Structure formats: C-alpha cells, structure tokens
Length: 589
Image (cartoon, rainbow, N blue to C red; front, side, top):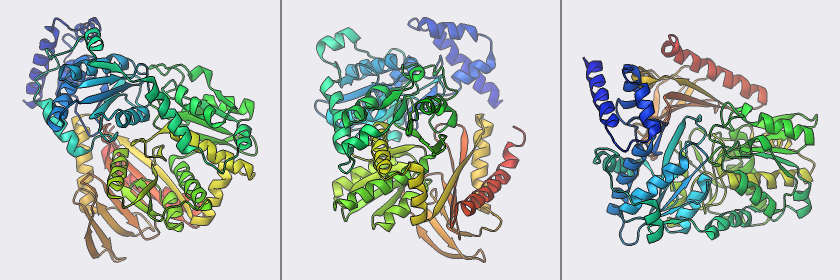
C-alpha cells in the first residue's frame, strides 16, 4: 500500500510538471521519454532533493528530486526569505559557479530570484574556485553566497552550496532554518524573477568586480609566500599541475607565477574547463587515476612535484618524484601533517610562532599533524567532519581572541593556511606546497624524505578509509540499523582492546578498562552528529559515520605505532574488523 501511495504521489507530480508551459525543451523531452516508466518517475518525483548542511547536491534532470532550474529557483527563494528575515538594509549576495554543465545557468537563475526579493546579486563573470567565492562574500560584505558546484562528483551531478556572511558554509542550525523557508514555497514554478537584462540595467544584478578577483590571488601570494624560501629555490622547482578540467587553472598558475615559480607546466589535455571530465573516470584528486596524466607528463620532464585540483579547486592531490624517477602519491593525511609541521617550524625559526596559536582538524583526520603541533606547544582542536566546522571555529576564535589560527585541514585533501578564506582552499595550498617542496629541495630532501623525518620525530601513523554504498530506502534503513548495532554492541578487534568510545549523537565519551567495564563518562562539547569513534589502547582509532551527501556509510581507521610495519599491521586488523561488520549488510548487494 505504501509503495502504491508513493507511486500515486510521484505520478501526480510528474503530470503537474508536464503541464508547465515554461518547461525547457530539454526537461520536457526527458519527461516524454519516461512516460509510463514507473520506476523512472518514482526516482525523479518521489520526494524532493534534500537541502542538507551543504545545500543541494544531486543528479541533473527533470523532477523534484533532481538539480534543475526549478529546484534552484525554489531553493533560492527560500534562501532569500531566510536572508531577508535575518538581515536589514542593503542586502547583497555573491553567486559563483564552476565548470559543470548548467552551472552558469543555475547561477544566473539564483541571482534573478535574489534580485526579485530585493537582494543585490554579485555574480562571477566567469567560473571561479569555491574559495574565491568565500573570499568575495567577505570582501563585498555580503549577507551570504551560493556556489554552484558538485565538487568531485561524477559529471551527471551539480550542487548548490550556501555560505553565510563569514564566508563559511552554513552550519546545521542555519541549514534547518533555510530548509524550513524552502518548505514554505510550494514549487519552483511561478516564482518572482527579475529579467537578466533588466536586473543588470537596474543594478540589481552586478558582476563581481575584477579588482576583487585580482585581490584574491594577490592576497594568496602575499599571505602564503614564505620568507625563508629564496627566489632561486622557487626558480629551481619543476612543477606539473592539472586543474582536472576545473576552475583552478587560472588562479593556481597565476599565484605560482606571481610568487616566482616559472617552471610550471599544465597538463594540456586537462587544462580547458569541461563538465564532462573526459580524461578521467572521476575528477577527484583522492583517486590515484586522476593524476595519471600529470604524472606521465612529469616523468617526461623530470618534474619535482605534481599537483592536481578538483573541479571547484578547494582540494588538491600531490605526487612527489623519488630518487629512482618514479612518483609517489601522498595521502591527504600525509600532506596535512607535512604542512602543519612546515608552517609551525618555519614560524618558530623566525620567532613568530604565537603562544596562543591553534591548529584545527576534524575528528576523522590523522594525528600526525597534531603530534607535530603538540610537540611544538601548539594547541590542537578537533571539529566534526566537514570544513564548515573548521571555518566556524576560525570565526569564533577571531571574535573571542582566545586563539590565533595557524592551520586547518581534513583527511580528504582539504587545507587552509590563511583565514581570509573560510573554506578549504586549493589555490592557497598549491602555493604553500610549492614553498614547502622548494624549501626541502634546497636541503637535498624531497617531501617523501621530509615525511620520513617527521615520522622519526613524532611517531608513525597510517590511515585508511573503507566505505560501503547502500542505495535507496532499504540502504538508508540498513545504515541506521548498522549504526544502532555498533552503539549497542560496540566493536571487537583482535589484539586491540578498546580504551574509549565517543558517541557524537549522545555527545558522551566513555572510558573503559581492559576488563571492558566503564571507568568514567564525560560530556563531549562538539555539536550533535551521527558519528561513533572507538579508541584503542595502542593509540589507534576507528570512526564511523553515514555520509551526508551520498548513500554511503564510511569507516575511517587510524593507526599509531613504532614503525611503518607496525602501523600497517594495525590498519589491516582494523580493516578486517570493518569487513566483518559490513558482511551482513553487503552480502546480498
């Protein structure tokens, strides 16, 4: 009965869309193709594309459960109502977009809706990186911003990221208020819109000025150039860079050139923006295949360093040339640890390491960088997963004066070194990685050598990620059951007794003895989240959380040991335990 009711509701919504006279030909043709196909209709019209903590993200196409002009209009109208309710006076918003199909179209639609609600809209005149959107929100003193991007998702996807006045992605409490405002709008049809030409003529829609865009790169170079790296060190470093068909090409190369890196080659096959991402299976620098063309080119020219940014240029992957001419890919945790160590030690060498400095990282990120920071007397603060929590923490410390922000990072290749942006920033990071590589090269070291030295100083660390995709309503139910089972029964790993459990849903940490009995309980002060983290007596840990943007459950494992071999063995034990946990849920898929 429930399935029949859902199908009836979906069919009704489908017919309502077919009757819309202003439906674009592309969407109308899609609806005609699926006429009578109940599964397709249910997939597109069973409910609405959810507005989560990161905004909207989904497959493009016709339907209430798809990214299209009308879901964008409806979300923009709800967001405009939220902004108007929370702000007064001359409200302005900034809208940016990446290289994906329909990104510019969606950006302009958002601006037309905002303008119709009395919010002056500044639209980027061409595609831009996500961190540049964050910078522009702050620079133009906007009430907030929207970035049209789906980050590293496949070509069929697009998304709608929302930023607050601090240039930070909105937090769950803000997202809930925006969601409620969107829910009050029946549909994306028949909403007030300002004509694009009329909006431009009246000044209700403007384009982000060139001086703001220039200021972003100039600020990157000014704030991220390291004084102890010499000009000839920069000239000597050979770099191959790929934007992976995304937004990073112009700002990354411009920043490197302005800083003095003149031996930079771009991967020509991946230079032009292209939302189809034709040369990669996935435009995700976390995937080794994404940097394969860049590594091949680097090998031919004997480049010291390979860097690749994702489509919206907020994350970066790195490969380093070894002594035998091969290239080694570094993980996000390794790059983060190296950057923390480099930034802090370089500041210490110049006598400018502040006594109240702080490094921010997420709870699923390696302890490698944290160990280096603590060794230097720098405080480390953990946040929930998601860079919005790091950005928010930066703002809190800025207002209170309690701490001076030094660095923030997460394991998924996202880093931030200077707080004029409040989101992860691959443009900043590409320059800082180059500075770090040039500094070590002068001393005869590669970044791999520097990593080995870091391990010797602070201990050995290794990490891995295991995820399972469980789609549909059945998958959601399975993920919920799996989390409930772990909360009730815990986890057992051979030769690795549990020392503590942190449940971010109940916001409680439980310390346990070797006999399994509870020693003490204490409150956790991070926001509530559906995350469990288990700590083991050897310093290793395992965290599990459902993904916020995909039908996945993710297991993050981290090991600490006296050698690489010991860490690798611990990681394998943890991975094996995760495989056992997942067996009942994935056996029939």
